[in-house]
Length: 208
Length: 208
DNA sequence: ATATAATCTAGACAGTGTCAAGATAAGAAA
DNA sequence: TTTCTTATCTTGACACTGTCTAGATTATAT
Image 1 (cartoon, rainbow over the protein chains, first blue to last red):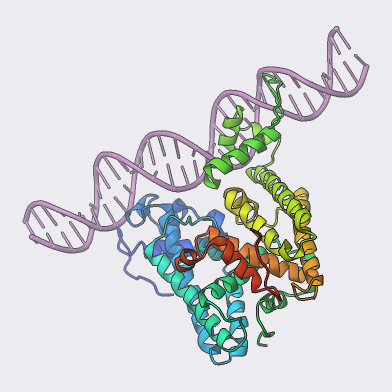
Image 2: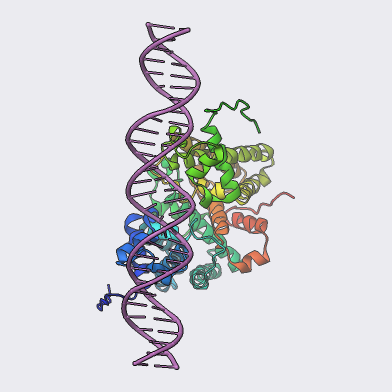
């Protein structure tokens, strides 16, 4: 919670302030409440001030998206550090960390992925941080392969399959597409674990 | 391509006309171009005429969504009929049909699932058709289980896992999150097949 | 100190979703 | 048939939105 004390009547360090405000609105009021004008208003500037720092609304969203990926990256990174030697739990804990992020930062997650960001707009910073996130999955997969937990083969392909599995489950859950009969009978952790174990060669578990 | 010939100066069978127009706009100009006013304009009525038939913009989108699910349902149904006895191909062809639908009707697919439709709004008709779609997956999974292609266990859970796998891959692809190195090396069919085979007990193939 | 560039404001434009009042037609009741 | 009622559709308004232009203000560099 660092603050820029200088309150220069006319300037601040907008850009970052706008991103922060955007992230807040996203977390508090959801993706549908995220408008450029509201961000500007909330940040205490005029409605077209953001255009000095962002080409578009899309550009702001991309910046927010990057912030989200950084946070996710950090979470996955620390999970990796914690379990990189406890290989029996590595995959499941990584998946669970991913899932947790999506559950708790739902709207950020939605903005990071689905719909809003079109694939043409490949901002280099975005691409970079997405790549880093993906690389963690690849690393986890490689270790699991050498431990006999995942089938051998092109680690990139396997990583894509694993990522699709986890991401698919998260998406279906967030969109309320997982049948009630399932949600009533099992908790999320079990469902996730079961799904992952469809992919593993030997069953793995979640810690605690 | 049935048409309502009667062109009653003042009335038609709006509601269906609005849905059709919406579907068209979605297919031709994408989800971001889908506005209530444009649909109305295109259908030749005033901008608030739709409110006689739909509570909301959301309600129109839900109706369009239902239309999409019906189409998907029909595709999966006919794929099922074609391969229900050719069990070696049943799972992969179902998955491929699903994938194809998503590729060709991308924006309809996006509307059907992600983001726009909030999970609170559970229109009974929508829920019903989604259920039917899901049931096909369950049926496919059950057959694959009895053929030793998929692991035994709660068919609902396995179906969820399988669906998550396929849906996840589709989503990642549509959002451009599948790494270039993979897309360059393999074609979509192979990637899909590889992913599914991570889940099967014995390798399956795609026809032709 | 002055010129140049970055930043911010104010105002406008064409869109949007939604609501309220009223016109128009269709169907039911008399 | 004529009248009443209800569904449908139009017009106009309101508060929003993203984006653009012109001008004010400040920082930076010369």
